[in-house]
Amino acid sequence: MSIYDELLKFQIIPDAYENWTQYRNAVADYLLANTRPHTSVGVFGAGRCNDIDLRRFAEHFSSVTLIDADEAAMKFALRQYHLSDHPGFSLKISEFTGITPDDYRAFADELSSLLNVRGIHTDIHVLADYAVFKLDKLYQKSENFTPDFGSGSFDYSVAFGVHSQINNMAAWIWSAFASNLKADDPAVAKRIIRANKYLIPKLNTAILRATKEAAFFGCELAKTGSSDSIQGACQCIHDLKSRNRITGQAITYWPFDTAQNLIYQMLIQEVDCR
Image 1 (cartoon, rainbow, N blue to C red):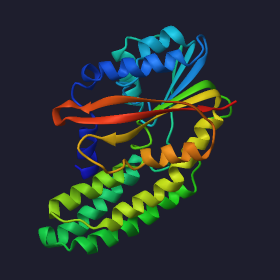
Image 2: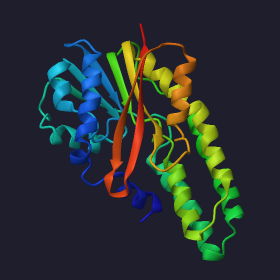
Image 3: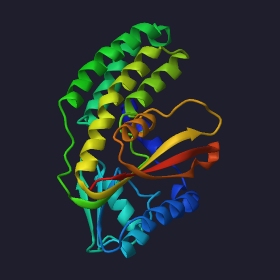
Image 4: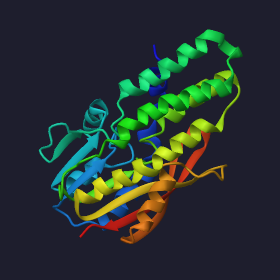
């Protein structure tokens, strides 16, 4: 099995639905207080919706569209909230970067092939150079890809915890190899950050274009025990500020992984799309 497929298993946080109840309620309270009832909403990067209360959305919005590359996760979300047959819900399967699971799987397998030649004696810098070379090829796809969710498709849009995730798989894959070798090379992280600088604005532009009234972005501002910025989230926060259309902000806390005491301070930014 590819390292990529192994890493996918860790994307499911045990007991997330139960542990995120307070956060989920805080997010819903804010969103429902700042949107008109009987309108439509697009939920970007919906996944399993452990952070978005679809039951409350069903009571407030007349139409809810879940948007994600993972159809199975979205269907799980509807089952979890007992909404599989609700006529107000629809699913849209969509890539946000143009890079597919097969692309990441191939990237991981190519690094594995090189690592298998010398094992733990592999020079981390040689491996990093190869990883950057392969990432250059991979990101050529994203440079030529523009996400499109239509124009004025929804009255409101919601994107929480999305921007830190859309380009994190390459970092996860690299981290697995670096951990195995007990070494690191910053060149790979720098290449990933460079890609975020155009991936994030392109995604934001597409989301705002698809929204008639207001879009709500939830980004990790900080995390417990670390002063490091969260890549993707950081770029999103700055990109939205540069557009000069923010009409509201709020702070809440996301207990992302209680087992590891990992808590994110979340910044909610409301952007006017009218």
